[in-house]
Length: 424
Image (cartoon, rainbow, N blue to C red; front, side):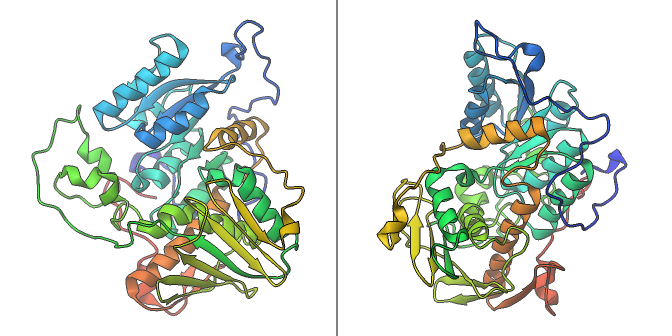
């Protein structure tokens, strides 16, 4: 993603289901033999992990990596000194040593040959760029959601993963959680009948999108907070600490996508999966009251809304013969009630099973349950819904060409200008 690496722009391609391993890249055998005394794999057989972004979410998911017997978290990176300190302490406490190294600059971490895979848990502004740089450095990656700020970014990520044969898992961990998997199974298996509507909850806050420039504040030393690196590819603006409070940047169009991408990364993704639409998306978006409606070519309707039951990130799938609704509480309801018999589909939460599945895919080189193309299609639906929201009118979408049909104003919002020296 930085101009000196000699790689050109990604080309548009359909993402293959099984990526080819890069010649000369590290490929790990499927069997790890655990130490009889520690329960952990021998050091020579462990996957070296680097963590980029160790805020609250980064440390939470890092715990899932730390709990695996066949990994070794070797380094953490964050632009904020306090977070680096907490990340290093968390790793060293787990392993009972002082071996974890910290970095301000993720490029230094990515240069390490002993790091096989990275967890990317920065702010959304950096997800796509670091994913591309990690792939070019020969690393596989588990990247937190949403994977991009624009459609063009996640398309570039997907093309890069295909071209370089890297393993990418988006942190949409509900694909690995039992109650969500069961609800999707009911939809995909035909037990609900032909799917009519798929309801995806958006976050309760962050509805208003900002493009605000805040007044300048004294910029701290780089060692305390590297403002230039925090901004990354976003346009330059004077330092203000409010930018990196989550309640602000999550709804700022330069850094994220507000309520629709915050939860839609999960809920729209589950609706896409339930509609067997992992390789496509809605063809039109419009607003009905407080809801954003996406119409699929197969006649199903995606409803992005609030007010569903069962905790955070709930979904509801409605067919001609029944419906199912579930959420993070683990509760599930359906009609007819007989659909709830023989549920199965157990899964871990919040991230353990999703992380474990990623590590297994790193070893087998098989594509993950939420690989880069799947995640790109889901977040693209969210981005086009946001374009509809920002323009205040319906938007027609071509999922094959990935462009707003006959809509120059809409197409300008599919990408954003990158600040030098960063590029896709």
